[in-house]
Length: 126
Image 1 (cartoon, rainbow, N blue to C red):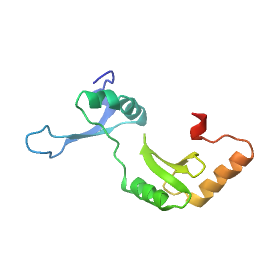
Image 2 (cartoon, rainbow, N blue to C red):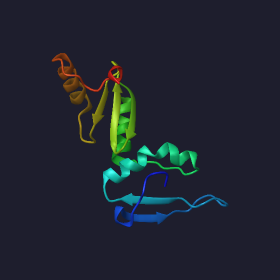
Image 3 (cartoon, rainbow, N blue to C red):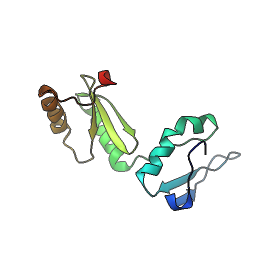
C-alpha cells in the first residue's frame, strides 16, 4: 500500500461496511497500536492520489471536546490529528487537549509556561 505494509498481526479487527451502489464497499480497520496507524496516516496523501481514502475515526468524546474547543472564546480552530485533539489559541499557539481537561486551566498553564520563557508549540516556530 504505497510504502506502508500492513501485516495480519497489526490488525485487531476489520469490517466491510455498506457503501454506494456501483462503488467499492469501504472497510473499517482497527489497528493494534498507534505506531502502525501513524505510518498509514503519513502515507495518506499518496493513498488518496491512488484512489484510496483513509481517515481517522474520531470518538464521540473527542468530537465533544472539539465542539467545546470551537465554542471557547480563546480558541480559533480545533482539530483532530493522529489520535489527539489540538486547539489554536488566539496568539497562534497550538495546544494539545485531553477529553477531561479544563480548557481554561490548560490555556492558563500554557500562558505561564510562555511567560517563564518555555516555548510551547507555536506556529511561528515551525
